[in-house]
Length: 101
Image 1: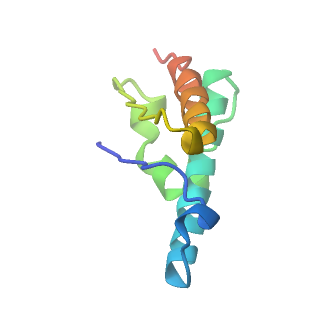
Image 2: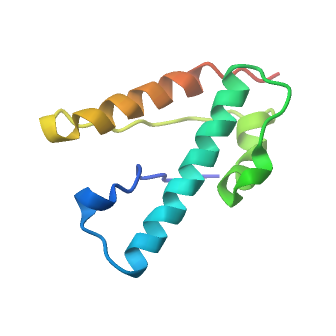
């Protein structure tokens, strides 16, 4: 699978309205579910919540199976993107800790 997560949708920053707000909320829900799965896998928890989201169900074999998975984290040197860049690096660090057999 190739998945472009494109980062979180910050509603204030994007100025989204109407249907775009609903889409942004759904994207953020999926990203949150994915972060819960990544946390469970990196901490070797006995239960991994793959069923909490469509994206986590689609990526279950890639994340929790025996596939080789690559994450490319894109960050920005701009000051106004500092918080998002730091969060992306933390996310990538956590993904790096996942070890499957």
